[in-house]
Image (tube, rainbow, N blue to C red; front, side, top):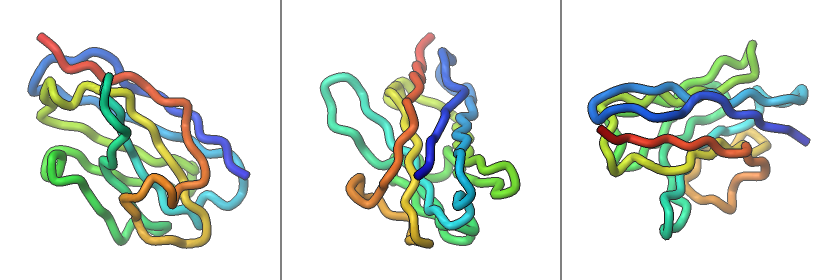
Length: 125
């Protein structure tokens, strides 16, 4: 099993940047595909970005492509989400997730086995 602990997030002005981190416990982090999802009030959780076990394959939602970058450091068992050019519509609770077994960077919530506790990102002037 894995436990995912998130950090980062907060309040930022439109056009600003934030970096989210997600640190995993356990010895098999390097075999996980990792993803980021978000959920705004009154909306369903949606896919943001994902990458495979070695970071060579990535997948982004159209709404964040070119602004957000997902990356990982397997030596630190950590995945990151760098968010640039933030917009008010990026405001949401952000979750990291892990899918075991050297999977592909899936957009499907059901593919992920473990979830972080979530962190709030608010983009507002």
